[in-house]
Image 1: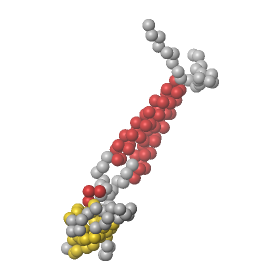
Image 2: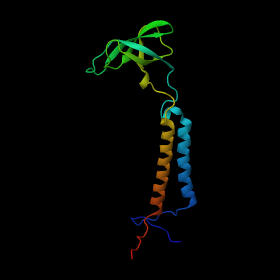
Image 3: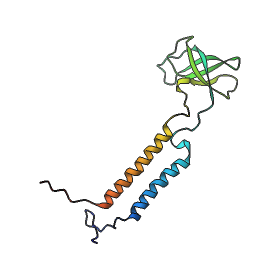
Image 4: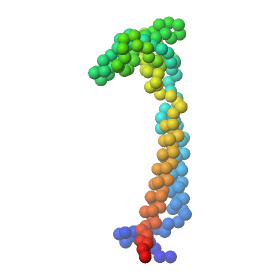
Length: 157
């Protein structure tokens, strides 16, 4: 068997199943380590426990400020509460749906719009793992092609 050489004329080790097996095992190890690292690697696993309620905007904010916050009033557990909503552009006495943290202390509560509250039923984790698998496979194919070296061009008749 003739020893292969790269494009600089240096000898290359033969391409065997051991070489390919190490590349495949490394890719699988990366995928399993990512899976084992937990849900936080590709996105949060659990969203903070919140309760969705209707609120009334009591103090609207102008959108010309960078960190605009509005004040809202809502009912939670039978009592009227006030909260700060990071946002702008709502009108006085406009009704909005907000997500209130389940564990909230007395006083002003930091709330967010219910439509923007992160959930745990998203596709970030499975899509992230699928992309990781594809990138490992692509890296393995690239390593195979580099180790294989150039091929003779096909003759066109």
